[in-house]
Image (cartoon, rainbow, N blue to C red; front, side):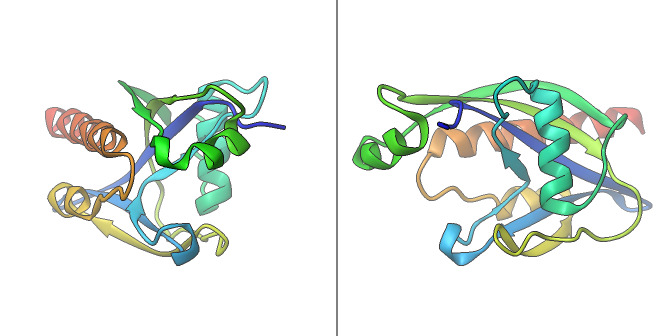
Length: 161
């Protein structure tokens, strides 16, 4: 079964006396070794919100049912043409872009339980530190979208205080 050319991106946070702290996950080296939030693709028949909750559960062990909210931020990224064979294998023929819908969710106390096939480290970071960790080795427009979603969430949280 081919993957849908659609992703979800979930920015997880915890409120602290010093302001929100965002959960950052480091992909294991075979998967790029970069930092990110939770990401993944909806399964056929699954809504974006259902996919976001499932991905959070699979990648961190947290259940965000009832705490997940859309950020009102979405973006698309172009798949690099130099890796066309990889993309065709993953998505099927003629897919050039992947659309992404961003979500946020507040987490309870405790640390994530990582899936070692996906991530090898985590960190709780303030907005500026979380933003500085975000690097995307291939799709720069995906990086811009993830940074914007994180900025939107941070602005929402600052507006609540």
